[in-house]
Image 1 (cartoon, rainbow, N blue to C red):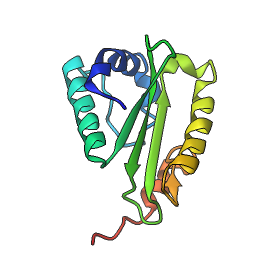
Image 2 (tube, one colour):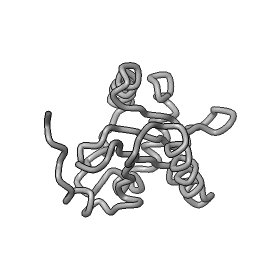
Image 3 (cartoon, rainbow, N blue to C red):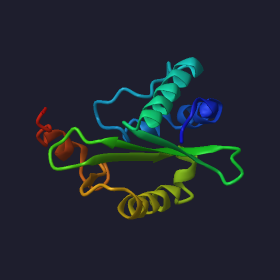
Length: 143
């Protein structure tokens, strides 16, 4: 689980990967910006931690085995689009891209979601469906 205790390592991973992260969350997403502060990241992590605790969304940090460095994050969120139970977004720090970690993590997360989670239909926007296609899908009906 991504928690406030990860803020220093998370902030380092985010700020060292700004250009790379601009494409991960969609074309209109403004996060992260060069103005992101450690305190703002702490607030974000606190929000993710609370969402995890109440079971509305699930954010995970990806750490080196010795936990000295954050390598990325995985977000499992409810889907706002019709036809999907969940939306999964993941990223690895820019320096880990050359090591093939992105492909390895993506494959591991797909397997983990399919074997351990209860979802029938999971979307991986920006990966298995383009952001343009994702944005064009109809929103779920509000009950």
